[in-house]
Image 1 (cartoon, rainbow, N blue to C red):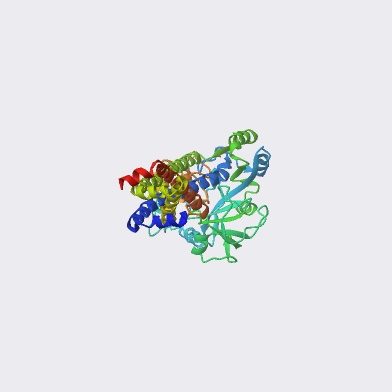
Image 2 (image 1 turned 90 degrees about the horizontal axis):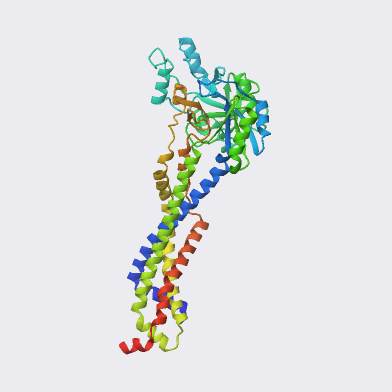
Length: 485
């Protein structure tokens, strides 16, 4: 009988014990694999953030702070100046507008209940934009927060002063990116083509399109001008999907602000050059003309993700070590039980390496069975374990609440609302106000490559755990074993 066949047969010699050992190993190996999957998922997210959000700077008008800011608007000439700064790979200008439902605006005009101070006509960065109307109805109900905002602006929603719906945010962009500098996730249709020219095409958030029963090819109006839905996008948040994207020149024409920019999204060529590029931009544009900001919550978010990564790695090593310890103890017990068998084999001439190999192969059989069950456990548990680790370690990164228009309109504590999702706390303007949300977007999936790497590690530990008892067989002297019998 070959060594392999004898090893497999020995592994199933006591079926009850084998089942118990495999069950315990499966739990340890499953936990180890789940932690490895979580570690790899977090590492991929850190790399993604560093490669995208981490290299983005936001330029706003100096002194422009929400709806109470001041200063001078940014211009296309300043965008060209920013693009010429070393290490800047892209500059995208934006212009944002707030659109009121045309039917509601007409009813309010007839009843004499127009916009209150600081109402929907306020533009981003402290700019004032013309009042714009649309045939679109917001996809978000006003709710309690919207009611509070109406009270601040002088409309309490009584019988004589009807409730207002939330506005729809329209953003003009100079490239196919959202307000964080990331490429728009278009779920249906196409982009807008040439983003440097006026166009009658637009991109709608998925929930906004659903609310208004619009699909690709449908039309809607802004200030009596007809626009065609070229594509639908998913911003990942309810507020972000209550938005419209048009080309930058289109938004500038609608606002009556040709050549003006609400903000600029500057992409740096590498994370290492962000700090120096920020300083260079401030020098080139002038601190009295523009405020250059970096994601203040990104470092905290990355720190929390780093903690999750370290915890998952430590847990993976601990679970892997536990599996190795289980195999070690089992094999030591088997060697002690089979002393007579080992003595007989050595007496008939079997070399120590053959006997040792038999125990190593037996340990690998048990490890293979445990890995098969453990992989199944990890495929179901890895997502939940990663989410639990992230939610436990993300409390320190919780930013101020991003309640959308309600907080932005109040103007007392919040900065400009952005169509990419939510608003930014005063003094933290930029695309990172919701850094805590970045943590919850980590997706852990048990990919074949990661599982294979984990199982390879398990087999390595199993071999190490089996070598120790295998070496013990060399110390067994056949004459002593047979004399004892």
